[in-house]
Image (cartoon, rainbow, N blue to C red; front, side, top):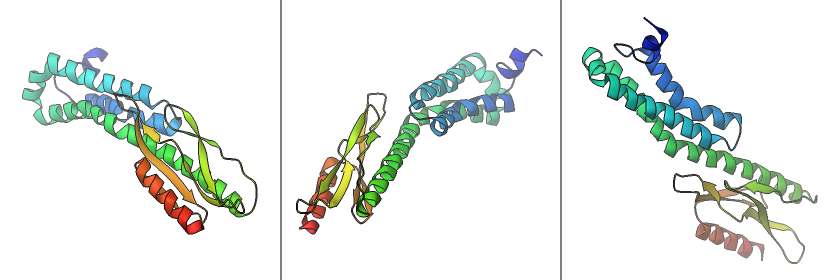
Length: 196
């Protein structure tokens, strides 16, 4: 039996085919943990490999596999087409990582300002671009009231980037993550009222 027959077109599906499909399914996770900004390429590779093999195996050996090993066949095909789930999960995970990074920067800024030190607001990653954090201070003494992401952190989708969340930190160190601009504006107004 040749290498080609053992790995790609065996008479019946086995652990090798399942491992290939599983590798395609888990491919985007490695890119998210390794570096930022590469998840779209790994997402495309995952779906191309997973669904491509699933379609090819179904067309070439599907009935034969289902007759000889129905449980193995279903597991392999489900794992192959499970890579489509990455379209929903991986962009959300990427947003969670970027929101956590933005929150970490805001916590550092609020801590430095709370101790009376001067600190500069940094840029944060919105997804398609970088944006600068914004702050609101007391007009009388310049003390920090709140700092927040002025532009939303966005989630990739096949139809373009979509707003996903805003991050806000208060002078006392408490923080909020909200889904839309109206919620953020409401929280900002509450903090302004408290500061009067």
